[in-house]
Length: 178
Image (cartoon, rainbow, N blue to C red; front, side, top):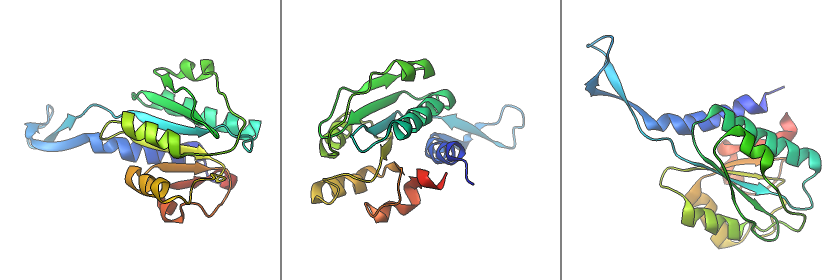
């Protein structure tokens, strides 16, 4: 059985590793023959969190737990965008304990278009996007939503094996496998 935390951590770390670059313009402090490193500021992590009625309390708890773990292992700010049929106010997570204080609303259907537009407007150039859902997104087949998903290239965490965004396979994690 695979460990979800380590898989998600590896995916996020592979995204973050783009911000540490080795270069010969800056020499290694210990050994002058080896290249040094340039560290760029870490990007923000933006999580679109499905809080619709189809998400069970256990699934929501697991999503929150994964966000908490991400807050523990990264130096990045995490923005949570809860959504169901509408988009709710975002939460900013600067430290792990902030996750526990977030008031999550929801219970309707699942429409992701509005939160995607919100994220696209607010995000930085290198931000990491994570979508956590149960694959029951009503507007997933709309052209503008599909195009935006292709442009943003999110990590997609789902609770079921579904058909949505099949072209996103290499960036998709199915929780039922864990």
